[in-house]
Image (tube, rainbow, N blue to C red):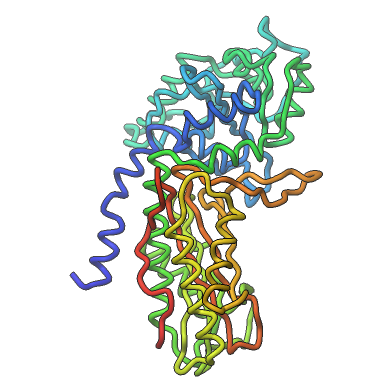
Length: 449
């Protein structure tokens, strides 16, 4: 086995175990979720954004995403009561066609419906939800023609869907299924956090008496502290992402086109089981045709973001091509010195503003002034995955205090121009009980080719 094959095999060695973890339910830190709901006075969460459904249930809905061009018709519901199982509200079609393939998920209550939409509160049963369908749920939908035995996939899907329908009958429409679930889970009169306008519209249409609160920032408060499964997924994604960036850097030569190198990052990410999100090269992020090429004597950085099962890596390195300008060397040295000083002092309770201060004070002590900035942010299901200060619907930077099991990035770029190119370094660390540790190999922060 060659070196590259061995590296990829090592990265993927635990993939089956990680995926089996997702089959048991969502990666969300549930004790943290209950704590945050308690802190903000929320009784439950109704989530339709695919990212949030995945976080709660370990399942990514294919329908109801931005790229599909449809509003959500699959919802995850969580209550503040840790004894209460989560629920999924989705169509009979989607449950059969995609959800059950991810595993039995016996701990998830399923509320299935026939048609997307909401007929409203007119034709309802005694519990206020639309009446269930009386016809066979399989009439016209994946009907068994009996011409040949069912395949393994068909049997699995039929068996697991039938098991769900034996517990709760098929409901007429998505609005009725959502209201039925809220009643069953004791959330009809409670205070709910929601993430999509369709949830608010259904609740208003059915005259639900409980309160509604936009949940985006609340969900960020939950996501900022990772569960053990999330930490494992973050390590896997970050290590593959760093290796993919390093593989691109290994092939940098004078004359190489930026767009070609960015495409190479996508390939190297895929080889390691990741999906590339973006790569910024020398401060250039556009993937449109460009004549930008690597020059001899240039300093440039490569900042790559890719994810494994939606958990992101974020990794940047500076590259000197030939003999760099002295100003670029000074900036790179400053970035390394500041980041080293920050790493040594990271701990729970330290605030973002203090992280930046440590880096800048280190530079000033060494006479480097303000050659580099130090910008902390959390990383997880999003590249910048942290709560902010809500300012009229917009977010301002929150001076967040670090917490154990938070994943932290500190951007260390030079923003100066006229220094012979660009400089930036970046790593991911997990905050531990009394410090921090990298979740991927650090290697060289500055590479000369």
